[in-house]
Length: 294
Image 1 (tube, rainbow, N blue to C red):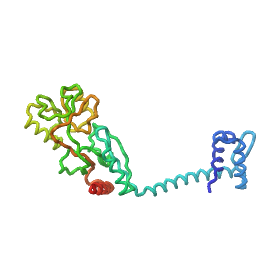
Image 2 (tube, rainbow, N blue to C red):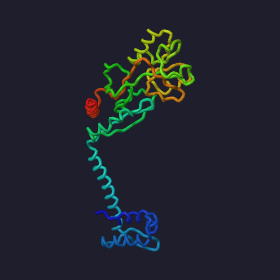
Image 3 (cartoon, helix red, strand yellow):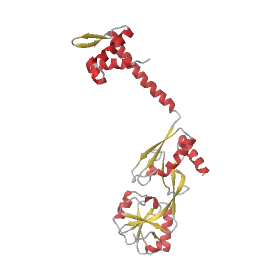
Image 4 (cartoon, rainbow, N blue to C red):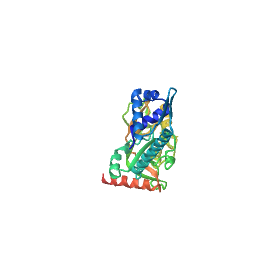
């Protein structure tokens, strides 16, 4: 049984005097001496050599100090082992999140996931929007929640859809079209629209082809193959129109999002590497089971 007096004894040893130990422990000098006297009586040995110059440990006192130190280390190790045993079956998953690609839509699933497997633990970790987010999978993150632009036949990534984002148009708030709440491509004659460069994604390529075929007066300006904060900053500094998603309607204070009459949607959901760890396969199985009930 571990006695509180042993902690007081160690503090006396550390401070080198009863009075200093009393001050650090917020006890009276008398209380410290009484505790040490009781400890010596219980052990039936002298622990201190008392003199006007201070206190020194006897050989018995030195042994006790050493053994207490060993005992505390053993206790700390025991606690770690018990905690490890309690979390032995826990599996931690790291989800990547950013300003443009928040994981909020996934959080609605989390309670259901934990009901299926209480050993799953989630860690949220941010990344920069200008990073190639898919390149981070299996390195820094187990999965991310984002719009999925790639072909369904892509062999590198596994995608579980959670919903769809509708495309919209974004313009500077001083743009002549900013007073509109809804626009069609028909309304954009002789305007310049910013779209991800050809080959970036099937849905963007489809929109590009529709514009070129049906609205040849619209000028297309290529942007990077993925959106980042600079995409919106550059649009805010121009009079161009940006093809965007409604989930980003509040991303920039100088831009207004306008609904697009044409029905173009982009699926979003959980993206991870194919042939990833067994842990991740188990995680995906649970998610697919939950979604199949909806």
